[in-house]
Length: 233
Image 1 (cartoon, rainbow, N blue to C red):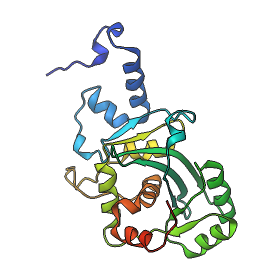
Image 2 (image 1 turned 45 degrees about the vertical axis):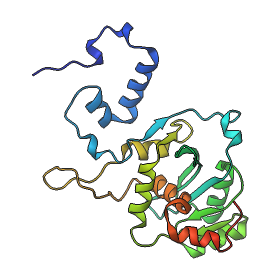
Image 3 (image 1 turned 30 degrees about the vertical axis):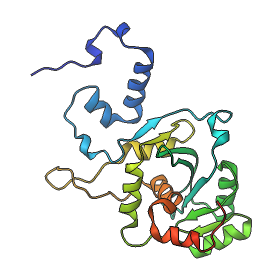
């Protein structure tokens, strides 16, 4: 059996912006490229976040009207990176926008403070991975950090909430690590190569950070905490 792809068509009939997307997919999402463009066997059921969309962050565009910025911080212990992310959640349309990221290795509390304050959208509370000592040091340095509540199945619940967003908009130039992790995330396979519902561990530092940032929307424990005197949003 044979099949055709866009490469078998006269190139002039494909709009430039489609070629741009195809080439971007080839570079950044090779598995998706092989499946959707080249027609190689693939399993779209393995993709964890089919709701990812590329967009361009415009600091003087709609972003200046974004309020209620959500911030998350995943601490990295060697060899893992520390990942800071901030987001805007449009409740009306159920859309999530990646606004900023900070991503680096072997950082002290002071270096984390510097990275966050260089990268963030605006001052406000940051929901963090659990590490009381680092959180205390960051707060003493001038940040406003609290621990994620986590709880039973928090990883699955947080990822399910992210999957149920209508769109997750990411600017791959501004947030390359968020883009890479979210577009390459796939469910684990069993020993026969079949897709499972198991979420892999690893290559998920910005994903963890996103879960913490959005915790108030999917974790009942977090909602309870916020209603008991958390910061004014």
